[in-house]
Length: 212
Image (tube, rainbow, N blue to C red; front, side, top):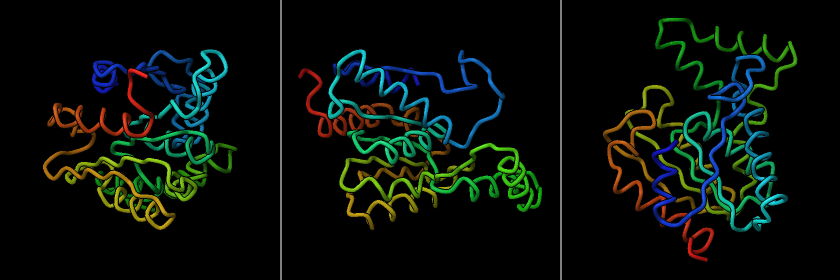
């Protein structure tokens, strides 16, 4: 996260970096991830703090997320219509599909992913509901950038195509960058100059120039 944060900061943007629950230096609650649903609440808590404590107008605040964080910011923006713009990198539309893909890569039958999700939900965990793909339907014409490596072995690029289709069906015009020769979250490391250029241009257009 320091890499893209530094890119934005170099272009004059103020950046707030947070640890999601059970990640980094945050308090460990369960030690499990919530598929983006609980994490989205952490994102919105930070968004509330920027508005209410720092006094930053909602139209000047965008969200950025990678992988699980990408799912979290998509859900957060769907739940909060005043989020101005979202850049998601290597995110997912449907967590169940991604987990099925991942367990198959370990030669485990895909139905074990369904059993695990069902078990978690039976025990009161909000896992992957609402889904990032479902929340994108609520974006309308808000700026959305979708970045994905076509060689992503963790979150297949088909998930990006799903997000694109949903946003376009809802009237959106997403900014799309599908990188042909990189894997999961690899675009920023493989093409740092282009990543920085695209990232700064996206948020400048969506939020206004950083100098303002």
